Length: 225
Image 1: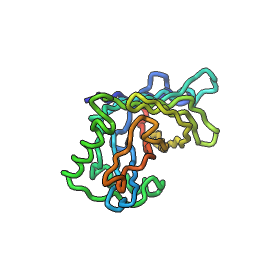
Image 2: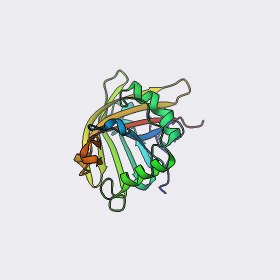
Image 3: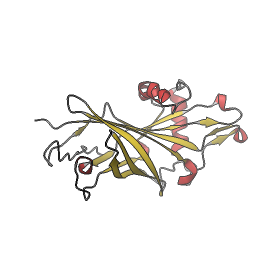
């Protein structure tokens, strides 16, 4: 299992450089939403794949500094074998927000444990993610900048199966009265860009859509004074 490292926010205008901000794992999520298509799509399901254990680091000094040389970045890595597929608790917790964002067409179907294990085995198999050959998934967000009105932009590099795809994304970084920071990030990618052919059955009448969505929520608690 990968160890979780604390996320460090270096806020030059808010806290000392050495102050550590702790990632709230219960309130945060790193996930993928896959979709269904085909003539018999009604017999298939949309899936919610969540990173169970991961390494994540953030340095956002540049977001709070006028120094143009200051860089902000986010790095994430998870072992493919640490992915949870259609976990009932996680699916129920996040599906309302996914519906609001239109990343999900309708509520997730209730699947038996046997079906979830079968789906996970297929996703991690040689014809899909191929966990044995490509054991890691990583992401890097860099070139982060602000429009001065609470919205941030950056370039997200996602690496799956040794293929890296870059996308320009936007997100909002919110603060609370207690100093807690929250960011929500969504992005769209295609499986074929990573050399992955989406799952297909019944001569293609049931298949996983090529396009999938990244859904990330980061909640970070301020340093303890």
